[in-house]
Image 1 (cartoon, rainbow, N blue to C red):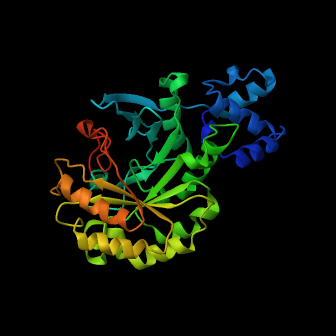
Image 2: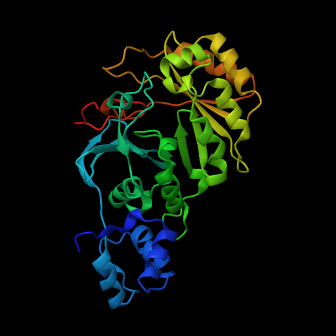
Image 3: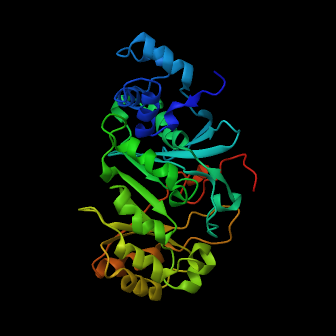
Length: 346
């Protein structure tokens, strides 16, 4: 059939409903999803506990797709960046960050991004389109196939290309597949979604998924945040913090606030003092990210001494404040450097 549906792109309940419309048992949907994600079946003929007749019906109506690995780049620190091709010839990037204790995969949710953050290379592409469920999930599938079983993925961070909360229609079904024990079975504590600060979506986040949330704050005044993060003109610092207070926070979770340190822009001790005041009433953790320089941006990385002074002030005032070390910057695989090589600006 010419109009076969991509079965990996259909949420569980919708797939069950489609089966019932065809006169099939709805419970088979979970059985099929287990084969697709947990067992990574490449074809319906691999689904050996499903009758041959049912597999033939699946073959008539559905197809199983995979993303194409166009290129891989390996950093001197072990980070691997994957350039992945989509059906419409667009490209996205995903980054594997291995360490002794964990293997973290940074995934994308959009081709490009609409947020326009001044320090981010992805922003220079503009937004081309949202990724669908399959394109989000398949980034995990691609990397899992390449890793030996003893080096399985342990953590997923939605910090790649795009703004995840700008694509909630496909983000939440993708998260459900990652968390489902019959699919990828990730712990909610091992998945983090990052946002530039879409306040209305932040308010709803905790009611729609139990995973962790990270917010790119990056400034302590509206004037500076307006300059480096245009989303602040719509949702300023006050509305952002108000949304954090209104969000349902699952037990043991803190909100992570990401703070990219830009030399001479947001790295003063006055900024550190304001940051303490802004986050004083929240269950917060702070990730400090010294800026990862790239050729298309004039911002500079602060000195190591300035970074440590900033961190010390936060620690002295009771915050968990971690300086994140850059990984993969030599292959433009670090935070803010993903741009889907070969892409042109919108």
